[in-house]
Amino acid sequence: MITVKDIFDYLNMLYPVDTACDFDNVGILAGDSKSAVTGAVVALDCDAGTVAFAKEKGANLIITHHPVIFSDGLKTVTENDVVYKLITGGISVISMHTNLDVGVGGINDELCRLIELKNIKPYLAADGYLLKCGKTDISDADRFAAFLKSKLGCAIRYVAGKTPIRSVLVCSGSGGGYIEEAIKGGFDALVTADVKQHQFITAINAGISLFDGGHYNTENIIVAPLCATLRAKYGDLPFFEFYNEKIKTV
Image (tube, one colour):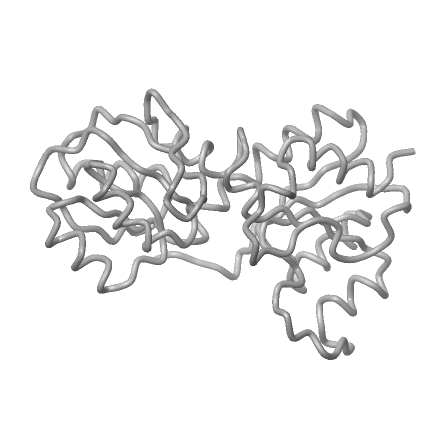
């Protein structure tokens, strides 16, 4: 019998929860840690669609990147809430957020691999967050943006720097604030998401390339490899990939 806690312990070994940021909420966030797992869904988020998919597949565990309970102010759980649907449906949730971002083989590593960076290394930001960096052979910003579009499957917002691109700093998800880190670190480009207008202006003034690949697209890339890792570990236990089709890019 494989329990929810067994799978959590394995994930915690790969991506220790004590490496998550202080603001985060990770671990077993809903359900019974002692219950036997009948199947598991791996997804970026846990919403009503994820819960419905889990029920359809006969799975009683959902493993997400974004925490299903994140705000400090959860005051009610009613029939329309996801947490209510989880509890009444007997479904547990394990969420691995910023610890999955920074872990070996985690989202930042997967993003570096996807965009074919070489000599990938960790880069410790001033705030203690672990980014990744590497080298690219695509030196032209316009060509690099087109390459990112083909790899991530979405529109890319970007500004081109004054110099050819060689060294690239990477932060999946919301990392526009690391443009200052990229400048101080002497990088030619930052690849991230959720970039604000003033951060693009900072990049323009500094002459550095900045690429925004979208929060969903720079993080959803972990679903398939994480699912493959769990399948390899647990053999016949079914693991299902779930992608939110309501989040679209045109």
